Image (cartoon, rainbow, N blue to C red; front, side, top):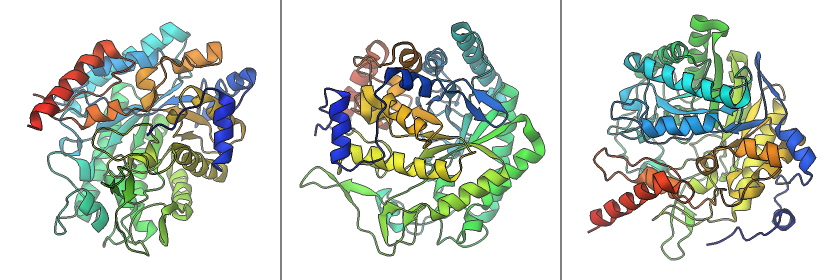
Length: 475
């Protein structure tokens, strides 16, 4: 179903107003647009050179060992030359059983040199393009994929609705308190390895339904890490404290935080649209949800937790929503779903509005904690017009782009030079990158993800191969 039919910014602006998307506003003046996006941002004791960010985008293109491979290097060279001053390095598993696919990158002692060389390359090419790296921030995202780990999943608690969506048996074992306590030390160790490699910032990832994200919603879990909000945030308090105790101010602690789980969706075979799976009310699970209507955000606990995270050492927050595994339209409003998935159950502008509203409420609640906003990509060539407006209103400090950067890695350089994005290079949210991420049928167990329409030379042949593998598997 096609939604983005707007020929001008004025048309899109009017559509947002008619839909009641009051937080989706646009900066029309080119001078003000450039001024907002070139604004420097204080982050802890560092200063980012502009207010544009690249989200952590997994390429699913590491080696089977978990080392960055050729396409990983290519992607980060393109990002480093692109002009954004916050490049959020992708989800990097802290141990083997934390990988979400066989080619997800991983960090351990044997791989430190690989990451050191990759980090040095990014700094070198950015310096070649822009003269300095003093104003460049590169946090590395540390992850444990939890329920979505392969080949063996790890779950924090049982949510029967998500269990149905993910085919998780009701008697599947839950990770124990003792195992969680041991896992804390893996995050601390991975932080040390990242520092050795040159990184000066780490992200303790807690979004998209992965283990730490799931832990925040574990209201029905018993023991030290479940039930009360104090217990559900205990893991973060311990990890932040251990990192600070061991490494002091040498590392910046960041977090990409899922702030609204919503409920799982499924394909309605009669309409092709997404529909929420059956759920009880009150809804006793989840994070950032209204228990009486889990289709709506409730940020009460989120705000309390963010306040604690800040007290414990958090210096930069990346605001995220939903899970790509069970409600992809919440996190990534799209024009076309990946093959076999459901069509948008709402106008994508409403999804963009939800992102802006949640991030704006959090940024205004914590004005001295810089935050990165999400949800811009569906706005296509006008994404940064909206980003500039959110910055000017004080609703966010950084405008972050994710999948859009796969097609347009130098978006930041382009907007600061010309005041506009080239429509022939802008992501159209057709979800080909997600299709590739979901394809497992090759000799490495995973196809690499990129943008076949706009990075044809590299990913066009990969897309063709993935489609052929899927066709053969369907026979």
